[in-house]
Length: 119
Image 1 (cartoon, rainbow, N blue to C red):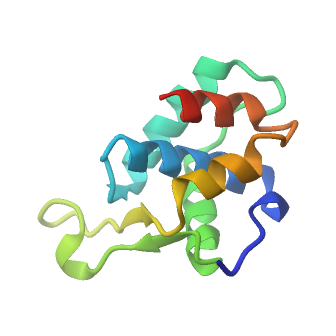
Image 2: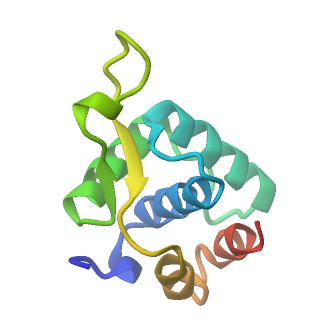
């Protein structure tokens, strides 16, 4: 792995946990819209003041950064979302256990990591 997960921005860690959850649920590759919706659902469920809300633009930027760091990967053109949409789809590029273990003790995202681990 090319990135230290714990050194990611707060938004990056939250989005990585969301992609991890989608991966565990066999819902990847997922397009940005799916990640945005799942991210909002997770943040609402944990009701953590530290995490707040993450905008669509922040999720998109985080996915790009996570891809650059080798933590998520964009699927090939043939695996993109439905006809005409042209939206990239993303999959987790690292082991789910690695993400969950690295973020389990992170004070900012531990409640979300625990929720993802339990599902």
